[in-house]
Image 1 (spheres, rainbow, N blue to C red):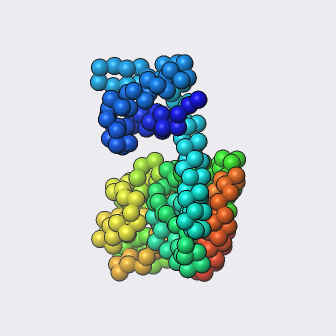
Image 2 (image 1 turned 45 degrees about the horizontal axis):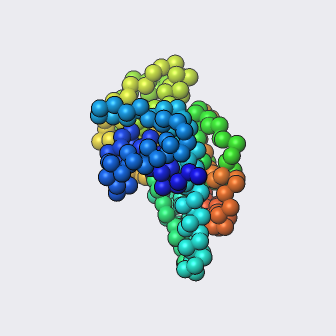
Image 3 (image 1 turned 120 degrees about the horizontal axis):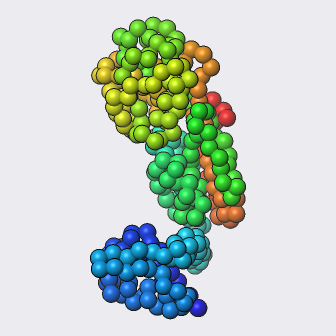
Amino acid sequence: MLNPVHLRTLVEVVKTGSFAAAARRLGYTSSAVSQQISAFERAVGVTLFEREAHSVRPASAALMIADRGAELLAAFDGFEHEVKAMVQGLRGRLRIGTFPTASARVVPKALARLTRDLPDAEIRLDEAEPDDVLPLVLTGELDLALVYAYDLVPRTWPEELTVVPLLDETLLVMVPSGHPAAKSNVRLEDLRDERWIASRDGTSGATCLTRLCAAAGFAPKIAFRSNDYEVVQSLVAAGVGVALVPALGYKALPGTHAMPLRHKPLRRHVHVVHRTANTNPLLCDAVNALLQVCERTVGDHVSPP
């Protein structure tokens, strides 16, 4: 029979890439980790790691076991917590993932509603970009997550997920207030010679900007990058460039002007996702709270899905 303690150790070794790093994370000695891996190899009857002088390399069997084992461990951890919650009289635990602009505009009000209606529930919040939180929803490490998709960077959702639209945001072109484009609705072609401020290379926001400009016949001259929209807007206010900012990330700053593109506006679509098979009884409460908050968030450049 496989030992779940040894399975957790194997998952950590694969994740960290070494016995020593796994030992530090688990609170064991390197020798204890080595012994557990050897015991696991004996149990399954196959060598799981190629051991070298100063490193280990996982075999394909180890990668497969770690991938499946992480899901099993997450399910076991959830079950263990549910048992403890039942014994202690708690109502359960909810683990939520979100992205920064939703953290500022949507999530606080939803959490306030949840903590008011479910005072005994344990609610945890993690913040990251959609590409980082989606795998955590799929493995069960998060119960649900807020994610987004740009018009020009569509997403395909894994079939294991239930996807609930929350709201749509218009993408706004932000320029310094003295810029000629601030006096009228802007055409993208008018900004072909500008310096641009964009999010990190490879993000959906940066990809959307590149594709949008390509459709207008030019490549944007990206001078500065930041995933923090407060930084992006401060750079625009300082007059060092222009930017494309989603409505949830926009705050009216002195010295700036923001507007949709003159022709058909582009949008970023915000959804909440969870595994369809997730039986956490708090999921329904959380999704309803998010829907109610988003209904009240609708306004300038933010609309129902």
